[in-house]
Every structure is written in structure tokens, then in C-alpha cells.
Image (cartoon, rainbow, N blue to C red; front, side, top):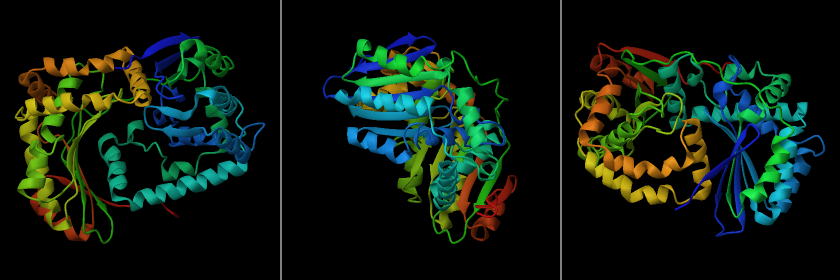
Length: 438
């Protein structure tokens, strides 16, 4: 089993896992907050900033910068989510110093060229258009809005169409100054590298940064419960639908998180779990049938039931999701020991990659835990009784306190929906209504 170590360099935290099997190093340089810190009305700004870092530096054009990376055989990619903003890279051990020198230049002396900024905005707009063409991505977009509304968690990390019109290159430059500080940086390395080798390389990245910078202020409260609503995302000529049921729960640092996660797995995390069996095997309505609960998040995590039935079965499948959810919210749950044994069987695969563990160690840090706590999960799972798990589900889910989001053709299912759910408010959205002049 790997061992993750961490050390402080000034106000930054550095994680590393030594793994000398291959002469390679994977690394991540991360801000403690992702798109959650985007200013109001400028969703997507952090993502734009991280993409602009790799579009040229003071001394290197975008082409020359990429040529240098490619000549080293190194990789460098930006990844921005709600909670984390990441530069992820990989290189041969012998090219680590040169690769991190390029990273240092990108972080401290980005070119921020107007032409590249305009090209990037074009790329992002095209990506947002393509997101609307992908039904699975589309339903995920509206899930955020249905649960969190105007809260920062309701915005897409990719950016919102209307906000892109307001973002300027000057906004990007100012965010770079505000957010890049020692206290906001987490750095992680895995591979054939030691702390002694890392320290001088980290020093060159961290030393030029101010000690403190922008910190995320108090967030407005998120919903603890919901009134029943069905959000129907109207998209033409759908023969298959995307159906989701979403309910608010707690963040990953709540003491019930592990028990709740095991309950979610027992309910819909394996092919033989209750939800999957009812949808897939008994009725044959959807091959896709799952429960999602991301336990390592420091923001409130939603509980999601997902399926993708044909239009003819969509209303029945949505009703089944609600019919199965309510007993679960009242503590009725089977298959807990099966889910426990399944998890214990696959856990070694979950921790088999040192590169993946570095990101997980960072999430542990943001949850206020030591990095090696990620290896303690099996013992925690073993210690949970079935009653512990049922109690967690009953505590954090509430009968009828959910919203449903469906991507479908409204004219095909609006009337059956209204007849089947007479007490639910049905809201209809055109799938591109917020993309004027797209």
C-alpha cells in the first residue's frame, strides 16, 4: 500500500507519494477552491484563467510553449471543477526540472494575449453549445439549477452563457493576482521523487507568490429540503429520456457521510441493488440505473437517482424513482452487507494508482483530515451496523423532499406527467432558452 506524506513550504501544503516502479512523475498544482469562487455574474472565470495560463507566457508564444512541452514528452492540462482548480501534469523523471520550469513560467508570467483570450471564448461557447447537444450533460446542468438555484453551487464550472458576455481579459488578470497566493496552493507529486528533490523545485514555484490572497467568504445556506417539482427540459425529437431525482444532503465532512455513502451503494450502486434491479431487471426500462453520492466533497453533496428510459416509459420510471425514494427516506433499505462486501472487494483497485491518490489526499486535506485517512475507509465500513446505515439515510433524506429533472420532448410527456403527478409543480424549460444568439 502506498503512503502519502505531506509537508509545509511557507504557507503552501505539498503532498507526495514515492513510487519508483517507473521513472516518471505525475503532479498536480491546485487552488483550494475552484469555480465556487467565481465572482457573481462571471461564472467560468477561473476556468478561463487556467486555460489562459497555457496559451503563452511572457517569453514564449503559445506555439513555442507547447513545442517545449512536447519536446520533453511532458503533459500539462487544466481541470476546473466547483471545488478544485488544477493544473495536472506528467513527465519523465529526468525532465521534471525543465517541465516545472515551464509550469513556473506559466503560473507567474502568463502572456494573457487578447487574441488568445478571444479564441478561447469562441472555444468555450462552442463547448457550451455541444453540452446542450449531449442529453446526459444537459440533465447534469439543470440538476445544479434545480437543487441550488442562484447559489454559486448552481452554476456550471464550464461557465454560463450569459456570464461569458461579461468577462473581460482584465477580469482574468485581476483574478490571477487575487487567487494565486501561497496559502491557496496545494501541490502534489507521485512517482520516482523524494522530498529532498522536490523542495527546491517547489521553492521556485511558491517563493514569488504573495503569502496570502483571496479567500472564499461565507457561502449562503443551501437548501436542506425541497418541495416537489418536476423540471422538464424540452428538447425536440427525443426517443430516449434522461431522468434524475435529486435530494440535498450533507457535505463530506459530516460524521454520517460514510454510513450514508454505504446506504447509497446498497440502494443503487451495484447491478443487484434495489434501484438497479427494479428498473433494469424487473421492468427492463433502462440499462442505466444508478445512485450517485460523491462522498469526498467539502460542499453539500446531492443524492441522485439516474436512469435513461425510452419516452414511452419515462413517466412510469419517474414515478418508480419517487416510489422507491420515499421508503428509503423512511429507513427501509436492504442489501447493506452485500454492498459492504462489494466495496471491500474493489477497494484495492480504488487505491492502486499513486497519481489518483494525490488528488484524493488533497480532498482529505480540504475536509480537515490527514491524507492517510483515505486508507482507513475499509475499517470504517466494517464497523458500521445495518442500523447505522439506515439511520443515516433516514436522517438526511426526507419523504417527498426531492426534485426531478427530465430531458425529453415536452409535447410527448407533459400531459402524462401532469396526470401522474397532480400535486407536483411542473416547470418547462427550452433546452437552449438561456443561450440567446447562440
